Image (tube, rainbow, N blue to C red; front, side, top):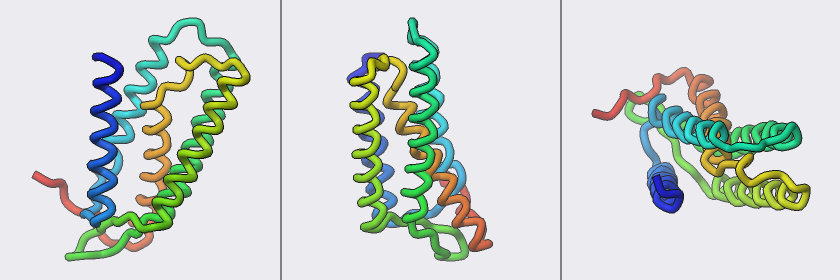
Length: 157
């Protein structure tokens, strides 16, 4: 698949997710965990097809993964998780968007530093970064939902 087409599809999917979460939506496990898992898998696949990676590239990748997971968890802690109609719902709020902006700035800085240090761009697939970040968010949101002791929303048909 053409890189630009894949980027456009991912961008559109992210916009839809953010708009739905801004309005507020039922919180079900599939919607929370499948998209970041798929993005992470695409990123890992892309990474597996990248030739010529060195130990320093992998070390940089591990650091970026830890950073992305931590920032995603922080961002997820700002998501409002609440009960509505007997199920969990979630909604983004202003602080969530501030955390998103902060996450983007930190990860951009990390990427630019990687460029300066000579890390290969192929060692940093964007799908992997986004997927890992949303996995961190899913962990934080799941933690909040479990603490409320309210069932997750049923899957949509």
